[in-house]
Picture 1 (cartoon, rainbow, N blue to C red):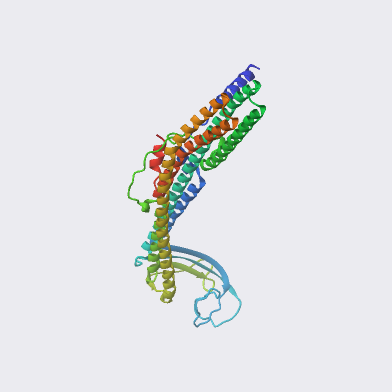
Picture 2: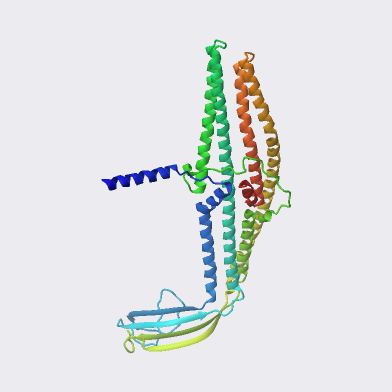
Length: 450
């Protein structure tokens, strides 16, 4: 019994300890790193790089000699006839002198042998194939970088959206609190018969509207947290955002020459162009003679002589062969034309990527400028709205104003507070869009964590 009590106490203490632990909040930079480390699309791209690296090793095996071994046992008839027989996969070949007989008696036969073949030179074909495989790996690596970059941008944008929703909740809660104070004021005046009871109903209606706005803001927080949790590979209840410097205005963006070719999206497309060019070079090297140094050793046995189950007659040979694809030229020319068209298409896509990135940079700059102007005006709006609420409330308590004036002033203040919070985050979002178009998120991630 004592042991059971001790175990129960330990379990309770452990549960209380785990209950008291809260999930640590993630900064913007930590959230981006978490998404890159756990999101499946990144792992898919990384495995594609591994497959491309294996393709390089496969292309390099063409430099190695080829050795084939064969062994076989058969039982067949031994009738033979002289004359030419064209190569065929259906009619089995038979060797030896013509016996001058034609019967169905059969004997055992056996074969065993090795054939070694090596291509000492190839006019650059194998090197071109290796270069094409290396270009394929470079493209896969660029695809990984582009996937990580796009995922980082999406995660950062979702993180900012979550902070914006949380700020809307904060402003909504402040609006509900103000309606609570207004109800107390109106209730006291109604009880003192200084105001009609209809004004208390109006105040409660304003409170209900403020709570509805708060509920919608909380719903937006929950939905955004679910999206961010999906990107981070976590449960929504475990996601907590650490604002850092994101609730303050960021620093000005330094004007610099745009180097859009360094954007991971442009680099991936550039790698696609280089891969297409490498494949064209491999095709151009395919219309050359193929030279092979060959050596063979084999043995045969036939029941027409001794026991056919054992190879009893041995031979060996060594030689040099050359083959030339005489009638492959039209097909190779067609493949070259198709690959050249592919190069032109990939080059055009690269130009299109640069044009689109330039448009995104210009749009982000305009958005950033507008967001900064709005963020400079919203504090004035909040201050004026606060003064309006104070004046309307004082006039109402003095019997000089109506409940409608106070309600309108409180709604204006709530909206002004939301606009002020969102204005600062809008500057960060515009700055994020500009960094994404330029292809480097690291400066904004570091500034957000300060």
